[in-house]
Image (cartoon, rainbow, N blue to C red; front, side, top):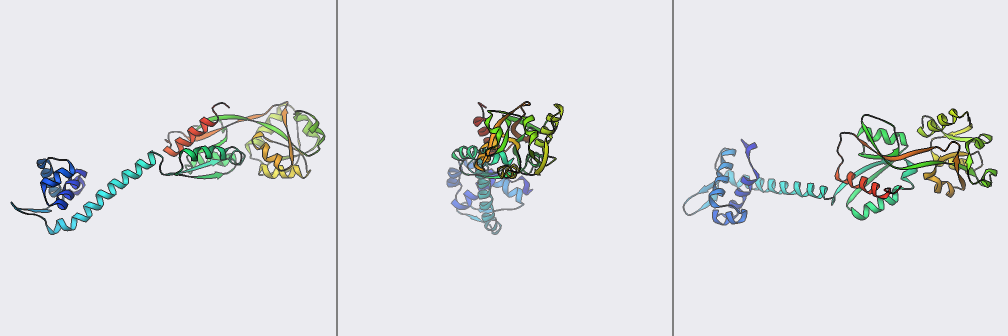
Length: 299
């Protein structure tokens, strides 16, 4: 049966066909002449006929052998190429990686992480999906990406969350707002202004709503948006105040928004890596995860 053909048999046949000598071929493939002869004989039995015509003085290919030689050479080349490619992937000399990250992380922290990753693994092509936190989790869960960076999604049976650091909420205020005179701001103080909030079902919105409701604090929500950057622009234009993760404080400042620490209550969320349980990571994904751990090991 052709399925019984081995790499050893192919190498033996190609060596003999090229050298036209068992003695020379045995040196090429580092086999004894008896072992080489047995390998060729087993190959012929597997394919169902003679590939070599032997006599006491000559060694030649049969017509079938002539036709099979380029096929055998191609099989050997494909075999070597397949293992070279696999080795390149395991050694991170080649590969692709898709990562999902919420915009507040993708636009602030991730570029520096990727810079360090690129220095170590320049041949790995990385695709970033910068999507809202909830979509990061669903994208990982569906297997479209191997790992994502998001807020803690809570206990789930199919996902693993590895925390990297804790992010706190800060007040986002327009320039020259009276509250900017304070070193920190209480949430109660934000009830006196029009509040700009993330739209539901944002996990940030849910966290803020539930935490403030427990303390009897109710914001005057007059505007809602899907993106934190949009909220920043609205605050900068003087439409109201807001509260955002400190991750994007630098972006808020670039828009002309002033930020202050928020206390009473002091809300925070863990940021970390989301992966699928029971699904091993590829070598590129493992390497990026290790880079993330290294970057935030002291956080």
